Length: 362
Image (cartoon, rainbow, N blue to C red; front, side, top):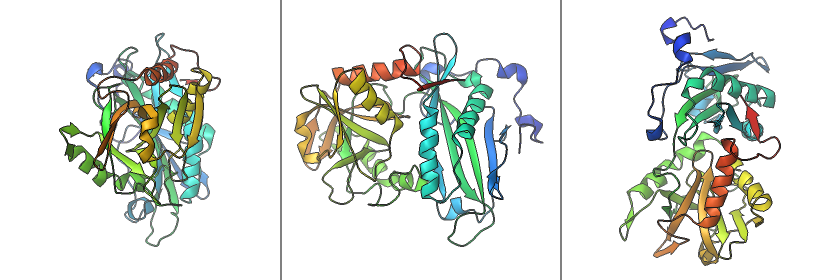
């Protein structure tokens, strides 16, 4: 498939493509909105084809595709941001490319070269510029690159062919309310197995999270509602690992240390590592990756979930068994969390200076 797909009705009108999409930017949530074009490339015979843009948002794959039966697939998430001068920023796409390469290697899939990955993202943003939310609305254009195993197959083996694609969706806050505290509850389920695929961004990890996430949202404890679950380490269930589909961080009560869990089954969040850098080099905090025990939450005055989709979601409190621990407040954002958020978002939207290499202009 290419941009001249035979179904001409799918092709965007070139005049319309230059106009802003008819969207209420202030009411954007995190849901699918069809945009004009997406990138598509095939791996056959040991190499990637030249990618093309297509208006078709439906993939046509073999019924025996390994992505369908054996979960041989991975994906990424990153955003494009509109600056005040109208230009568009991609935030650290090289890091997403590197993480996708690690995920592909873990699942015996061909790696997408960094240059190809970044160029695909640039093409998709440029082709869908009218869907990039205006500066000041808080919205962004979310990009979803993915690799899937396809082709005629039935055995448990790596696929004979692969698809690399990137599509985009304009989004607002992942959790309703934006930068407001949310409560979470620990889960007895495990997000990933020890020495499994927890460090790779693969669909199976997320499929396993659907039931505990739904149970958390349906639960109430003393009138409190929960946004999602806190996953503990799968070996001992004593240490925090992730917050739903996001990474966890905390600030010590003296406001001097930024602490985040470290484990081989945690997905390495690009947002988290960006916050580690900013906490140390912009806020002057001590930073630490290590064990965060669920029984030691009293040492922390603030906490949050972080990731591309969530950006930073302050954690008001965590329910663990019969105990509910409140950090800074269930209604107010802590001062260090606020500074970190302002610094990160300011860089992404071009309002604050970025460390070298963090911003790629489209």
